[in-house]
Length: 392
Image (cartoon, rainbow, N blue to C red; front, top):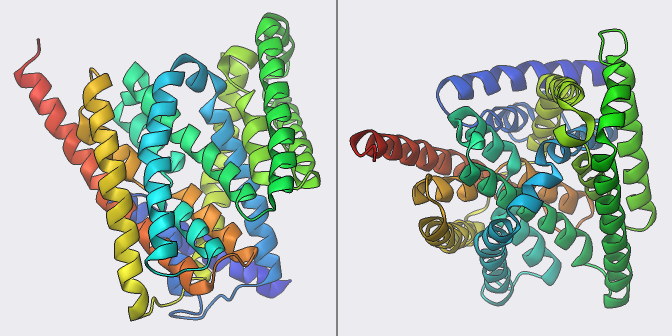
């Protein structure tokens, strides 16, 4: 037990510290914990080694992270901009993912499970970093910003569905898909019902939002999330989707602004201070050196997803977006982060990919997170300068 506490202490302290350093120099904060795990793990210093106990903490952390992503993704993002959300998800994620999968399978001769899983890990945009970029820039308050966020959230949801389906026999996929479709329909009906009764629900929850009773609201949400996640595990679908979909029905229109604010603040604080740095630092522990023979595959994955996904995002944005420059859209859909690492971690734990493949996915994620954050920032500043010169 002492070794576990010491490992948590070392990982958490270094992960938070490096996260702040990366944030100060304008890089994605999420890269800090990953680097912390790589440095502290067997690859470099060897201060902390992977263990079953740390894996359990990683799974618990993942539950809270995904539940928060679901809460912040709100079903309204999908329903109000469904045309653009689907368009972005298909063109900026699915098309490059398919191209990467085919290339990995036929050109690099990867086994089917490896080709699909590693292509999925590298091709998926991440709502964790994208939402931060949109919020910090103020674009989240614009309709175009919500369309981008919706496209990323839809891509993430599709990625999890692909992940739980691609390795199963067709009959099992059909059964799982039917069960998932039925559950999503139930969630939709429940969401509509909650919205119709929102005034009554808000009046009840408002009585619980004082300091002494906020914990009860938080506990109720966790219990619901765990129950749905357990149901997903029982029917053979990863708990990750359960956590995500249970979070979707919790939004400002269903529980009220005050309660929603309490939940966002609570989840945000506990995740940012513990679960996020722990999950990504533990993820970094499993990274190993990429062998020279994997470098062509790494370059292929990054170039394919960046060029195809970037072109698609640029084209759609130029055609349909009115207030956001195409370069900003490219940055949002090019940045990689939490979701790709989560899928790579799940693939590694399920033995769909090797440690070398996992390391490749992590390196690709870090490279694209840094590069496309710069693309986003540069395009945003260039767009602001253009707007100031041409206010009309």
